[in-house]
Amino acid sequence: MSAPAPAAVPTPVSAAVSAPRTALVTGAAGFIGFFLTRRLLADGFRVVGLDSMNDYYEVSLKERRRAMLLQSEGFRFVEGKLEEPGLLMGLMAEEKPQIVVNLAAQAGVRYSIENPRAYVEANLVGVAELLEAARAHPPEHLLMASTSSAYGANTEMPYVETMKADSQMSFYAATKKAGEAMAHSYAHLYGLPVTMFRFFTVYGPWGRPDMALFKFTKNVLNGAAIDVYNHGDMKRDFTYIDDLVEGIRLLIDAAPLRPADGTVPEGDSLSPVAPWRVVNIGNSEPVQLLDFIRAIEAATGRKAQLNLMPMQAGDVPATWADTTLLERLTGYRPKTQVPEGVQRFVDWYRDYYQA
Image (tube, rainbow, N blue to C red; front, side):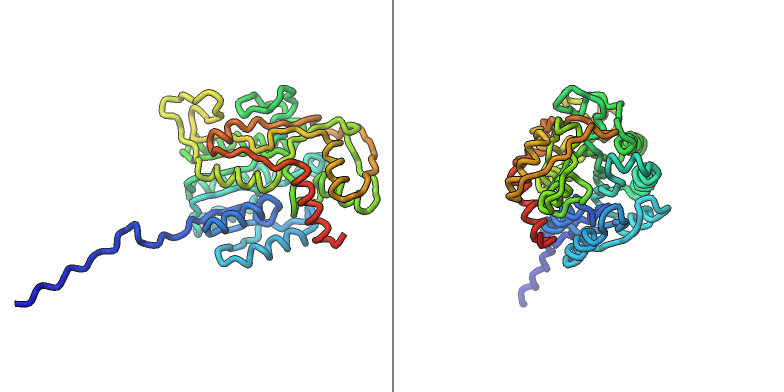
């Protein structure tokens, strides 16, 4: 009698090829969204990018960023506004992303004085649409961009996530702080894990033309004067784009959990009643504005002409992040120094604009 044939050996579950995680990134053609999307694609994510491609600044920059992202097979682009009724609901029903990172917003302190309605639509109505979509189709982790401007009139520094922040100085900051509160309510009501991150003066290649580094570099290279507010007596916690993206990427895998007994570890901004946390992402090293300008002079080889002006409405004289919580959660501390980061931007600017 012949021996029985050996039984087929089932393929271990662990050996099966798992599908890549899907991330939805809003504002994907924007400055930060572009770099974060590239990082997620490099890490093996499939990324769905949403962007309105609006004309708040030159659309050609957004188009170039989008074109670069579309070179990846793992990227899908959807054009539309965050606040468009039902858009996010339908997109999340279709894609069911495990990770959602909201970077879409109407940015800019000064523009919020000129056009507050744009901030209501994108930063309040848009956030409400996002939260409703997340309630109906819960991701594993929802991460949302806030701003260092949320600290408002606080003068005690460095800024710590646990300090009171109820005195916003601009309508932009007020809408972003409101977004934090809206997200907290959904985290509490529906158990959505939410991380809010407060950015501190992000800069780098492919940055926004309305930001200081872009405007200063352009004018210095063209021999035009630059407007320097508060007569240069300002400090900013300048954060290089690669450092910011690294912080976001690591926080993706650090979803907050609601404390079972309501006890929050000392120094943690975790809510006692929700899986919700706010985290600073900054360089933790305030730099005088005039020193920042000197770095631009060194990188361009040109002397800046300064047009000293009073403080603008809505601005604050200084920002400075305490990043202890970020380091505790991720083991990471931003490290790029201003001279290095500015040089990289100037090199990109000269190449992109043939300046």
